[in-house]
Length: 156
Image (cartoon, rainbow, N blue to C red; front, side, top):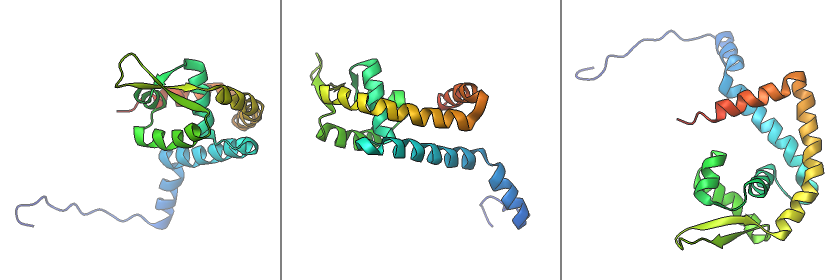
């Protein structure tokens, strides 16, 4: 290769080494667990027609009050596009609404009366899912959660 970087010849791994790498990969394990936990919460909340991602938005708005899309996206570690996609059906169902701010260029999201009512319906279902996950994780569940929160705060 003239002028380019020299190619580094790497030894190919055999099938068992690839398998061991896959099974020990933190990314694979975390993503797999996240999908399973999300599915568990989604199934628990299905009777009231809410997904776990939407429940998270309801609970955050109930707990923190009005938030701009930027603040909400930043706090949840989501990009604005993904957040907007999750907000659309909730605005359509009138669970949340946009509220004008003093700075007219900004709008904040707030929970509506229907949003609070939905949250009340969701809470016992969410608590059941929460208990299930806690039982799966065992005695150290809260410690595991604290560690995951710490990891999630590292976004750079």
